[in-house]
Length: 249
Image 1 (cartoon, rainbow, N blue to C red):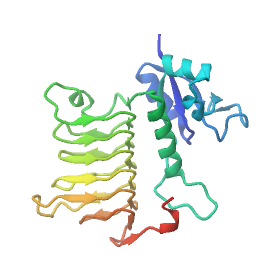
Image 2: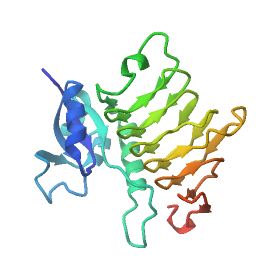
Image 3: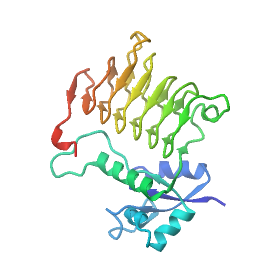
């Protein structure tokens, strides 16, 4: 019998995450999302069953029963873009939902596709790579078992490659087909987004670590050759510029 799992938030291509859950012996019983609860019945055949914020209500019997009996996984995501005035900040929304899960004491699991290259190595007794919680790894990704750290709530999309000596902070989103390594120690800060097909310049002196700060967006098809400060964009042409302060909240 499969274990009950509740998705927190909504996203397109929800079935790909549902399949990974099924392959990990979880049955998705519903979605908690206060933006849709009461407005629509389901997403991809999965029913909306409530407002995620009720998990913080100690007097809500249904929410407390879910916390007692179910696993949870946050599925809403963002693309690293800054919202225009009046638009919802999807990065901030994801962080808010992660906070709800943490403050409620929810049992947050990892969803790692069985086809992840080296999956068995990640759990081997000799592996020195460590994994947090709430991590998504899509099919055909690779994470080396040697001295890397994948932080809580990281999302690694299909076909991406994480070699040795890489540290991903909390809630780092790695888009498809990225090579997240530099031939040196690489650290990526919390709440950063790495665009599709990003690569690092392997000609750098491996004794020099590369640091990508917090809340950084690396554009798709970028070639990164140096460190990036907090709250900056790195463009596909190699330019680095600061994000608008008005959207930091």
